[in-house]
Image 1 (cartoon, rainbow, N blue to C red):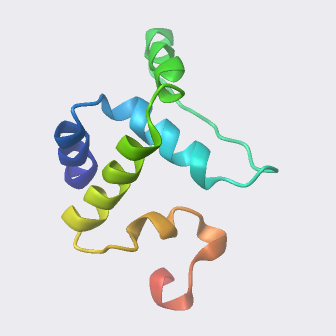
Image 2: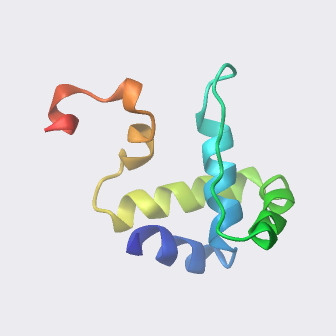
Length: 88
């Protein structure tokens, strides 16, 4: 969690829209994205996810991988793509 929070701070962009935008670029066309919120006001960050530039999003994802000490971390978002080594 610290890696994504730090990467969002480095991007000077709120975390929730970055995470939503990251998932929207990762999921397949037949997938659904379920967003959980504790309060309805948290849905206010949803429109901002569509305003994040591709460059900002790429830098955020690269930075998360760097901070997590795993440059491929963004490829492991989808459990269907996990190798047996990741599951262990």
